[in-house]
Length: 77
Image (cartoon, rainbow, N blue to C red):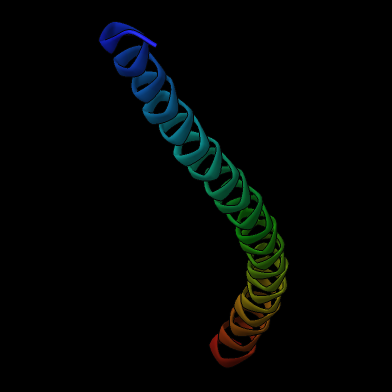
């Protein structure tokens, strides 16, 4: 085998190693995206629960406000 053939073979081996590393990095990135998706879904659910709690708090505030208005009217009589 000629010297250039050996060098070409070595280059092919190096290229193969680089491809394998790139493949592993792609798999890790894919896993990270899946984990990020799960985290995003959990964050979305938590946001919805917080929104519901805010609505309940708003309703309670409105009831308290109405009670305060009625109390004020009663005191003015």
